[in-house]
Image (cartoon, rainbow, N blue to C red; front, side, top):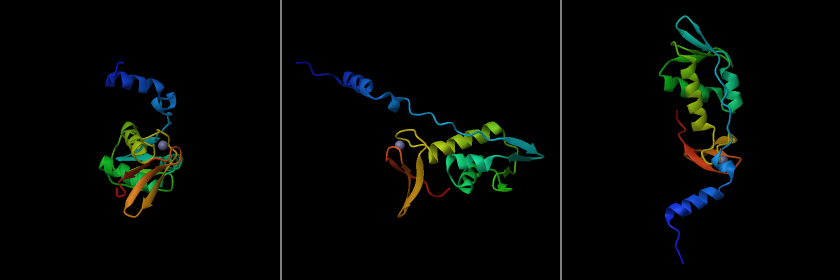
Length: 139
Ligand SMILES: [Zn+2]
């Protein structure tokens, strides 16, 4: 009787994984529409992006401001004003990063998650697969 080695077992296990696990559903991350006003960068659809991601706009805005190390204010519910010139590419990169950290489930790759506080721990809970992952609550 031959004992399968680890490599073979791994190969076999991978073969048996359903495709959906390997190719996690691709979630389209909304793109920021930005333009410059003097030295400021205006993103006119910021509120809509947060809505698409089902996250509070201020949470996403605070995270992105910190990541870009720039000051900023929300002009209205939908319009974000960054205090410096920032390229749309960079803003989109940060939105993507935010989405990966606070929206997409790390287990199944789906965006059906919510942020839930349990005692001192803040978790990202997935409604699709039930996974729970602690995330930083303070931005
Ligand atoms: Zn999941």
